[in-house]
Image (cartoon, rainbow, N blue to C red; front, side, top):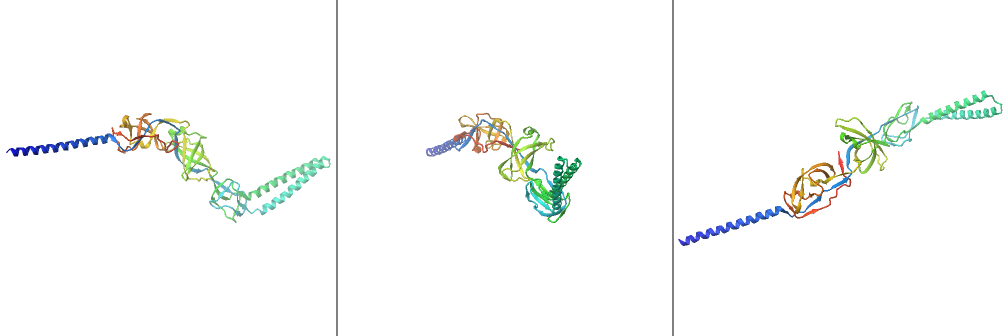
Length: 364
């Protein structure tokens, strides 16, 4: 009986020891988990929030447009003996694009040259005779009138001769050729259509609230999708005073088409940038610091707290903060994916954040 009692007591003691050991291990495990929660060993980077001065640049998409097409027509009659253009040809202002048969005009001009030379000599002769009283005033006046008539006829024949050589009135691209060598032309016959490329326009739209940013004569920079590495310059030439259905106002920019040795063409896509006249001072933080509508704020001893914020304008890789943060706050911007409320950041590294872009820009 006594042995049986000892056996029962031994079993109970053994069970008690086992339960005590299990409870102790659980308590230690919970302490370790809690310690892990309160201390994060992975690297985290943060920045100290401060105000930054920058010039706000807003971007607008636009389209390159040709100012207007020029129709070239014949001003005289004749047969085309030489044609120097094809569709798509590039021509310069004053370049000869066609020549008409001018043999008859040359002959007529030569006759008028002879007539003018004779009339001039006659007038000089009568002038000398009149000085010596050997010619009457009527004879001198008749000679002067003959000279004026011959000079007028010479100018007309020279003009007719000049019209047989057709020049490009502007530089540009031949968009349409209407004649071929051998064709017979009359005054007004179409010869070609030239798209002038020496000066172009860019059209873009600006929302109503941003119209104060734009004024006539303002210089703006822009890029072209086909040549993103080059910055082009234009001048605002017009602000159309009628808004479209989206409540935006069309803006026109005049562009000299000789920049960087590149010829821009109608229909190309442009990205126009406009800058504020004065620098703006505001709180900005890296875009990567923002998680939905909050950031992780680092308090004393490296403990984290969630802070709801209100954002404003976006500037490439940075965002304006309207409320929720103040200058001097420390905000995590890298490595925050494993952060929870109240955690202590052991490997916190505070850095001086550098933007990916030198100029802060917004976009539309």
